[in-house]
Amino acid sequence: MDTPIVEMARISKRFGDLQALAEVDLTVHKGDIHALVGENGAGKTTLMNILYGLYRPDAGTIRVRGTEAHIAGPRDAIALGIGMIHQHFMLVPPLTVAENVVLGDERGGPVLDTRGIEARVAELEKRFGIQAEPRAKIEDVPLGIQQRVEILKVLYRGSEILIFDEPTAVLTPQEVDDLFHIVRTLRDEGKTVILITHKLREVMAVSDHVTVLREGRNAAHLVTKETDPRAIAVAMVGRELRDIRVRPGNVGPAVLEITSLSAESDRGGLALKGVDVEVHAGEVVGIAGVGGNGQSELAQCILGLRKVTGGVIKVGGSDVAHDDPRRTRQRGVAYVPEDRRAEGLVLPFTLADNFILGRQDQPPYARRGILQGRVIRREGERLAKEFDVRPPDPDVEVGTLSGGNQQKVVLGREISESPRLIVANQPTRGLDIAATEYVHERLLEQRSRGCAILLISSELDEILDLSDRIAVMFEGRIVAVLPAAEATEERLGLLMAGHVEGVPA
Ligand SMILES: Nc1ncnc2c1ncn2[C@@H]1O[C@H](COP(=O)(O)OP(=O)(O)OP(=O)(O)O)[C@@H](O)[C@H]1O
Ligand SMILES: [Mg+2]
Image (cartoon, rainbow, N blue to C red):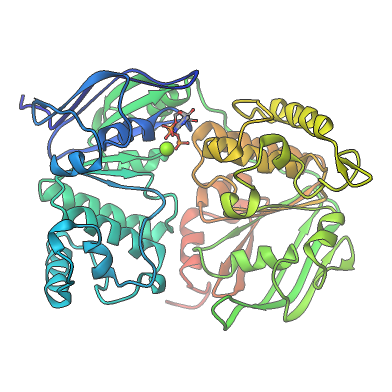
């Protein structure tokens, strides 16, 4: 067998009291797509940050192409041909694609030779089948293209080993397919890819080998062809998964009634062009659709966060279309926003403060204008335990929690107010299997309690598992509403792509 291109052996890393990695091994062969999987907080990013030189390990050795490497920073990693595509892109919006690709590469010199750069970028695009419009400005291209720019940037520096940290979390299903096509081309061109992901379907679809981490330790090394999603899931979670497909429940009166709703998008033009939808008490209505077809604007209108230009939104019979967010919340509407880091949480605040966000000026949290620190801490501690936030420390800064734990804080806060309507937009994006299962169970619990739930998701599995009825959104309209029993992935997929039923394509 040939020498592995990367061999990390007995890597340990501690952050304060937390043993993030304990004697972890990772062996990657050249020309492989190697999946690195594990639940939120398992240590995946930490291990890759060590390989990329962002952290130093406390113990352990790294060999690259058989030679021991001391990687003191990204510069050393890049010199060894290691490149990392981070989850949060690091691009400069007013510059072009080509300019961003070469940015930070010292070989360029102080004067940008625009023509030469565009030609080199075009050459890379051709070789690896990556289309990214070299002359377009970053601010004008969608996330899927921005990610390709990050890939080109890494390739431009001559990387042979490409690390992707959860690259699909921000992508639409179509963009995911395109990315995997690129990843396979990279492999076929002799590159080595390390892919961090939570999604078993993705592991099965593209990887050759799988390393599973659990709580900072190796849980399994598997050959993808010789394993199955269940075995990987069990290694990740440490137990069998539950089957939660929703059973018909008791549906009550309409809680949310939307008629002919229209609203503008941020870029001008209509985002919503006459939306009609109803959600009843004890019912989950799933909104399926490719991201960007008006789903987020719909959620924002219901919450009073976006101006309604026409139509009616009724909650419990009263028109709320022109209410501000505060009044809407007082009517019992809870919101799990798409971007929890920007909209759902105040990252530098503590866990306890985030749990009472929006109620901090009301008793018992404030009395005569004075914040009741002790009451807030105690409530934070109680909710952290109830919603299984780790660590359950009311004083911890929310920004330091893992994605799954951050989402538990948002969900916990929203549910603890016993809402009559929950609008949940991509509630499990970026979450691991256990956290996803947790969020689903909590939502279904609310449904059993008689809460109405509007679930917006681009994950068809999630829509199919949780919904009583499914509405498909396309270009600012609801183009079909189906009972869950009549919905299949294929039928939904066609509707999502704009095929109208009964009309030949
Ligand atoms: N800079 C840091 N300081 C303190 N703790 C950290 C730091 N970076 C990571 N951790 C902790 O180390 C553990 C492993 O984190 P890591 O980010 O590697 O997990 P992960 O597997 O990438 O999870 P996710 O799927 O949520 O991205 C977590 O408990 C995390 O809170
Ligand atoms: Mg991570």
